[in-house]
Length: 158
Image 1 (cartoon, rainbow, N blue to C red):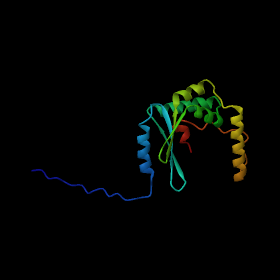
Image 2 (cartoon, helix red, strand yellow):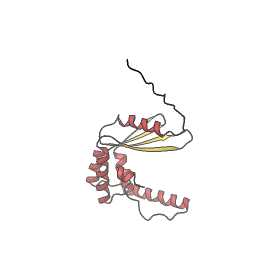
Image 3 (tube, rainbow, N blue to C red):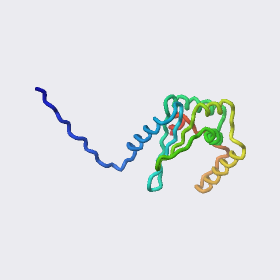
Image 4 (spheres, one colour):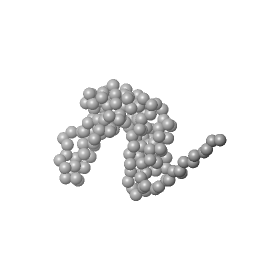
């Protein structure tokens, strides 16, 4: 005769921490995209705040890191990152979740072929940085900051 042992039921306690639910949502979102994709996922909160999650589909993390290495070696900057990203981005929403999906193969091709931001866009980025620096009492940067990244190594650097 076997004896059944019943485990204590798991007690679910509200914590106010939305991260586990957000992580589960991110995992589900990732499953809906093609391999070699970088996802920028924003959870808009009812209080007006937001939390950003980065995720990569199969092969995306390694390819994103390779793109970043090539972009930095080529001297690309954040204006180029904005321009190339806009050329290769699919935007969608799921309720309060905003999703930007970046196809990394076309981004790699743009980096390898030397696609750069137009001068007027670069000027707008510099004006924005100068205005933000003045508003916060900081010294404006003389040039456009570096490439921001599409791979985990660069994006997760503190």
